[in-house]
Length: 96
Image (cartoon, rainbow, N blue to C red; front, side, top):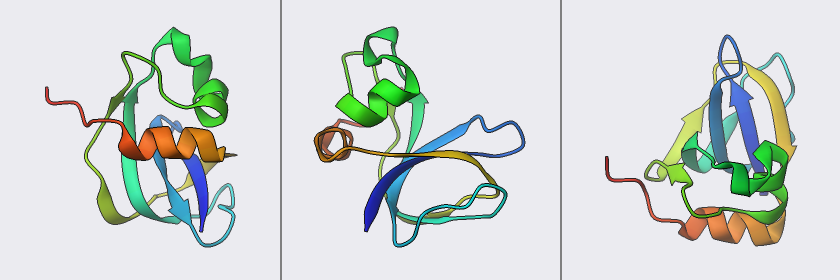
């Protein structure tokens, strides 16, 4: 399984971190396992690319983890480093 961040939906504004068996294909749907929606990332993350490369920073907001989800249409996807994946998997879910 490969850790990825997928931007999906009509405008690509649905940002989901998870694992997939094959590389997502832009324009197609993707199935992600152990998925979490990224609700907000602070500037300290260094943008979406920084989040994928270095992982979470204070202020990041994530949902709870779901076993499986399918995206509607992949607009963009990024590979996630092992360091970032560990941080994203263990980051506490936002409570509000």
